[in-house]
Every structure is written in C-alpha cells, then in structure tokens.
Amino acid sequence: MPADVMELLDTDRLLSDAERDIRDVVRRVVDEKVRPQVADWYESGRAPVRELAREFGKLGLLGMHLDGYGCAGSSAVAYGLACLELEAGDSGVRSLVSVQGSLAMYAIWKYGAEEQKLRWLPSMAAGETIGCFGLTEADHGSDPASMATRAVRDGDGWLLTGGKMWITNAPVGDVAVVWARTEAGVNGFIVPLDLPGVGVREIGQKLSLRASATGALTFDDVRLPADALLPEARGLKAPLSCLTEARFGIVFGALGAARDCLRVAVDYATSREQFGRPIATFQLTQAKLADMAVELHKGYLLALHLGRLADAGRLRPEQVSLGKLNNVREALAIARQCRTILGANGVSGGYPIMRHANNLESVLTYEGTSEIHQLVIGQALTGQAAFV
Image 1 (cartoon, rainbow, N blue to C red):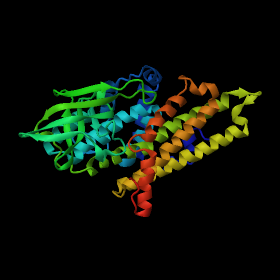
Image 2 (cartoon, rainbow, N blue to C red):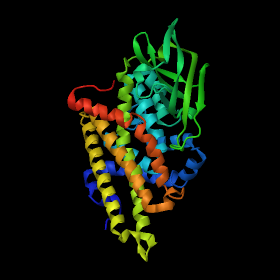
Image 3 (tube, rainbow, N blue to C red):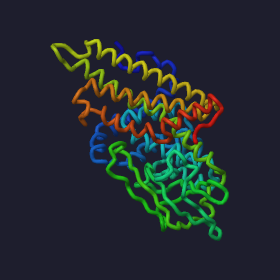
Image 4 (cartoon, rainbow, N blue to C red):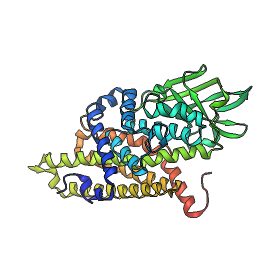
C-alpha cells in the first residue's frame, strides 16, 4: 500500500525539485510550529499571529509569489503548494499568509506607487508589519459594487467614512488596504490602523476559523494624505483581481485540509477494531476511503494545472473560480465523510477533522461564495451574466 494517501498517483513526479523543496520546508514548519498547538489555538480562539508572521517571513512565505521588495519571487505552483501545507495545519494559518501576501501586499505591489511599495512591502514580507484587506461590508458581501464606504476629497487629502466587516488580520493589523467609493468610482487607499478615527473591533463567538484573527473596521472621518491613494487602482476590477490572487491559493489550500482529514481517517480505520477486526477491512469503509482519495487527487491535478497556467501567464479568473468551487466543495465533503469514519471521536478536538470541517464551512463562502463562482463559470460558458 502507499506510505501516504498522496502517493496513490505518484504525483510527486509532476513537481520540480525546487517545488518539492519549498513544499517540504513549509511542511516541516507546520509540523513544528502549528500542529502541536493549533487545537489549543482553535479552542481558545487565539493564535500567535505576529509570532507566526515573523516565522513565515523568515521563510519567505509572505508575498512569496511577488517579485522584488523583499519578496521571494516564487512560482505560482510553489505558492500553491505552500498554501496546501499551511492549510493542512489549519485554514486560519493559511488565511494569515493568503491575506497578507495575495490581498494586502499584492494590492500595493500591483497598484501602488514606487514610494508606497518601498514603504510597506519589505516590512510586510518580513512579517514585521501585518496587513489586511478591507472590501467586504456588513450589508455588501457578494455585491461589492454597492459598497457604502466613501472617500471624498478634503484639501490635498481625503476623508474616509464607512466600515468593513469580516476582515482577516484586522485585530492584529498595522495597515489596511481599504476600498471606497469616490467621485471617480472605486479606489483603493492605504490606511494605517493607528490613525485617528479608525476603529477596530474583534469579531468573537466564531465557530469557524477560530485560529484566525477576524475583525470589523470603522472609519469616522479619517483624514488621509494624498499619497494614501493607490494610483493604479481604478474601478472595481482592481480589488476583484486581488481576490483572484487569493482564490488561487485557496484552490490548493483546501486540499491540504482534505488531505489531513483523509490521512487521519486511514490511520484510524486501520487501527480501530469493531466486530473483532479493523474497520478498514469493511467494504463500506474502503468505499468511503476510495471515493475520497479519487476526489482529492482530481482536485490536486486540477490545482497543478491551474498553477502551470498561472506560471505561463494564461490563467483566467473563471478558471480560478472553477478550481475554488470544485476543490473547496470536495474538501468539505471529504472532511464530513472522514468524520463518519471516526464516529464520536470525529467531533473530538483530539483529532483535527471537525476543526477542518468547521473551517472549510467558512472557506466555502469567503472570497466568493459557491453560488457566485457558479455564475462566473456560467457566464464564461454562455456569454450571459446572471448576477442580477
């Protein structure tokens, strides 16, 4: 039998030596820094985000797919593999890296002025500065075009009013990339979170992503200098392009949670005895394991294909939507099925399966709900938009 569930198709042959090396380094740091403590972080609703950020910064994981400014300039596939290993530890840990690099840092790297890039990106890449991304609002999730946050000109600067909701990293953040409606449309602004008028509230009582810091931001006539504006970000396409970057990481990341669940279920099934023999010897258990392995490997091959398209400069947003829709949906189904194999033990914090399942419930709907991704794919197929 394979020594590991991912050896079934011998997919390691599809990776370069460099990609395998990066994957293995991230796997080791997750094994050493995350796995021993993540159950306690989840139960307490607290994770050492700044400590983790600095550790990940030393490894070059923050903004790793960006070039220059202290970023590693890795391939899209290498970044995806890193996300997979991080989410095998916990979705909240992957979210820290994803929001920092693919949302906050990417927005500055893609749309910022050179002075803004030099000011923020090196410290963010090192994990010394924590960033967040303010797009979602309490009343405007899947419809960001209806955002209520406004920025109006005030002398040579701007006045920012409004609020953002469900913002990863906000409670521990230093800076936010905030999207607001202006007289020109939708624009992005770099907003240090210690400015007068900025309010940060941590969102509590979460039943999912408990090892991730999630908050709400409010802006009460926050005075911003002229150079807070991201000069190259014009219109809603700018923040949506950032979401595409982050969704790509989720295509890989969700598979990490699924892989971790399947590994635990296989180990459990081969050791747990009922009716005088291991439950792995029963046909129904093997059928469950086989079906889950099939979906896991299909999702992995899909992720690798999208990664190769990204590295060739040919990846389109609807392709990322296809990957996110499929891989998160199947990862959640795998987590739920693995829970049935463990029975009552599946809901115990001593095993990671229910934690992964709860986390994936959030991953299923954040950065684009399944329904939105279905409509993106539908529009690509038919040429007709069905969003309204």
